[in-house]
Length: 209
Ligand code: URA
View 1 (cartoon, rainbow, N blue to C red):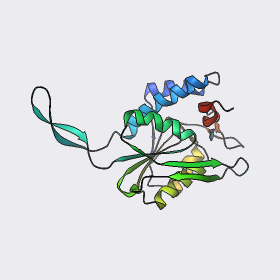
View 2: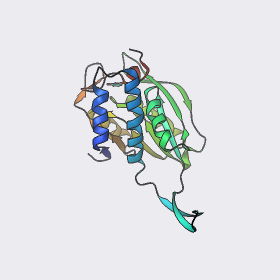
View 3: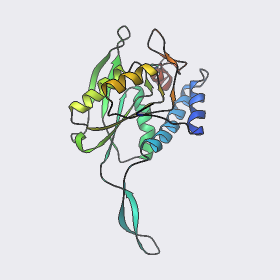
View 4: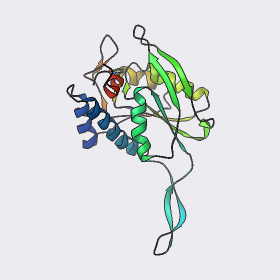
């Protein structure tokens, strides 16, 4: 599917299956989110340009490859996206963080914003939006809209699971935003949950079910 990368690495697939299992403990689930986030961070940053910078090893001087240019911003959609962003920060500790607070109204499934705080120079940065579940696409499209209204132009979206409905919505509204996911699941149930899915990601991460 155009603009969508399914990360098929066996470690990602194995960890995702462990997370789907309803008997997984909160602490186990949280640890797996962090681990899988690091693997997804590796994938989503594959094409970052490198530049050569002079350094000295204990043996001699050399020009060593370093990531060049644009600084990264991780933009977790609160609250579940936070756990994905925290895992990614372990690999990219210098990234800035833009918090996008959205909750979904349980009746309408609409995304309601309650918090937004981002670095001022979004236009000059690569923004990686994180949310474990791309379901209806309401939160994803609202968060991206908001980031774009603040100047963001180079945006990527990372999730664990995507429903075809959410992908379609994203492709229609933000075709310039590529998506990375560990799986495209069957679809949504009548309450907007991904099937077979893994349940409510926020509840499973924070033990609030
Ligand atoms: N959000 C979740 O946490 N889980 C779903 O299945 C859909 C949206």
